Length: 254
Image (cartoon, rainbow, N blue to C red; front, side, top):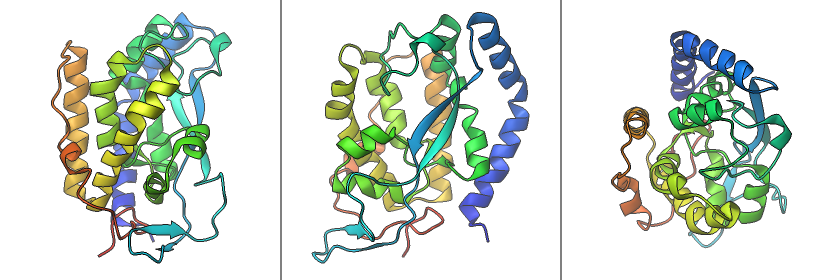
């Protein structure tokens, strides 16, 4: 039986696919006309870890049963419109602001987030939710996630999240140079802390507010707005550990 969140996600994703179908078609045509190669880019990401979590014995958090060192969650294929030249792929999992691998039309798709729309298919399939912790590449999860960060894998990953909005507004515009070090050392810990704030009390109303914030932020970026306030979650990252993991529906249990 589908949870309420999952049912809403599926219904909304189907509606959005229908509503945005003209945009999807134009994006596909634009990619074929401006760059050789496939229309879609299939990225490997780490999805939800379905193992049950148990108390760690000290009251500070939870640890998953049947621990496997070096591996967390289940890999899945996340769909995106291709925005890089085929000869340049694969490369680093993090892309810099002025990455030479991105072709001009692909740059527009990335700035407008149209390249993310194929993930509606992932939502319908059940790989992702509309709102949830943003999924990372396997090598980033296995190399850089701490024990606290692993907790974010207990929820279905999302197309948008408070952490990904923070990245889009505060970090992505300045991401140049050694992007992996910048991302993993300066941004990733804060992003995951923000995601954990979201997981403390995820509700349908909260999800709707994040979707609305996402639309506002994308529109503002497209018209050239560069200064954004800190997300409200940032002020709560030190409010204490999450003691109850999300249920299978992605919501925190009582």
